[in-house]
Length: 184
Image (cartoon, rainbow, N blue to C red; front, side):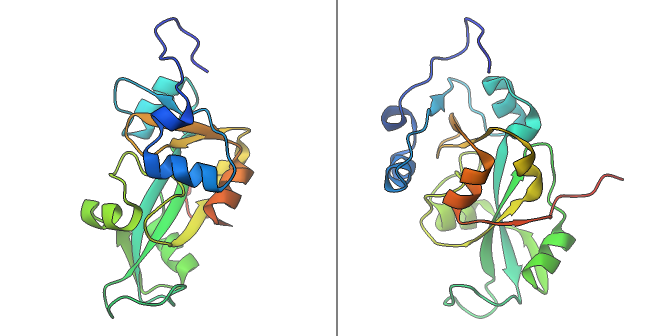
């Protein structure tokens, strides 16, 4: 943790988290120490610097679109693709070929900002791992489990919260997979 005198004081969940995310925490019976920072933590590097943790302890909540995969929830127009949430550590990049194979999709790609907001209800840089507008398939990269604690966005680009990675997987309803790019 960053214990420097200039570090922001953590706020309570109710005042710091996005209201929809605070509701999602309450629905799951979670009490989280949501921290609000005066400067945005839109990137994993910014979040790690603000928290004072390793980059790999930051959870990136990324929305991808999969085309040609069996839909878990059904619905939607043919050809529009299925939004899929991928949780990966801040030091990793998602290997889209591994993701495509994991989903059994014809192709996958990063969702644009409009689809991210329509699916999650949050802006890029503040997407939490759960508490979204639409239910989606959720995949969590196995690399997250290497840590005792990970930090994820709490619904805004200024807020993060800590959680045990196994609990993160459970509360997000994620399936653990290997979708990070392999080291060269």
